Image (cartoon, rainbow, N blue to C red; front, side, top):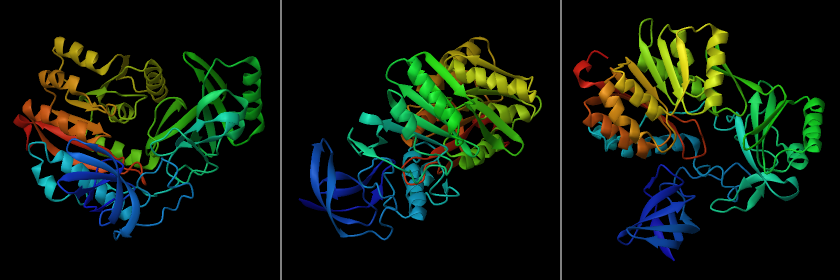
Length: 423
């Protein structure tokens, strides 16, 4: 056993302290905690430890409101008071971004970097459950594949109900529920292609349960739609995106509207402005940019998302928006060879970031690059590449999309140094 005092949170589930000369990573803690810990494993340069006893709680420690904690692995920061969560996220993000030339000042203070969510519970418009034997629905334990049965998830939208009937009717490993107004759409990820009897049982649930608008049964390339599986997502006042429930959309719709507004303000799309939206999905940023009169090209490797984006652009009358099903890196290389130079590039890559795009972006030399990221470390890596290519980071912000977890969405603007001061 050892004693450790927690000094800060990582951009992850653990806090940081010192045991002798080594850094200790401790999940489930709070800055200011004095803990008795056991060593789980020892790596070169750091230790992973578990809490055995809280000797002295930190000032922002609370009893997690969720009855399924600490067994459930879903909310890894719920032991922290919410206002402090926002502050600690800002500090963790600031430490990572301070490694980027020009952002060193962030190391001293991450206060105000992260915009708090309107609500810390009831915010998720999508929940993805694991399904165990006999249709038991829940989430995995932290660091384990053992299932914790769940009757109700506190972070889920009030419209979302645990899909027990579907889990019992279908052979599925995972099952999602997605809010669609006051109802929900169920997306079942099947272990084997649906049999006729399973389809009939699922269809009966859709027809009989007024809370269920529709369902999608998926197994590999097989996809069966029952009822109405379309979900409206408000992007800003007067603009809704419509896409089937199995298409990606941000889970925190209130925060997504704030993010869309920030991206639009940074990119400044207007009539005659050419915008390239990489990893565009169904048009989360493309459609608001097109609404402002910009000439928009959206690219995404997911063909179904591109089809949804095209349908939305057609429905909304955005004739100057086009969408291409292609990997972002391939699209960027093609445009570079074509000597295309968009005025603004928006990119929202997955957690791994987009290191393969930095060279192409540098060659295209757009006036600004708006980078949206859910991972501070990969974002900092890619921003260093943009700075080396002649860009300057002039805007930085973040939004707490995921209260009670360590996750956040970060947005930055990089401008060409030759136009710095005009942006």
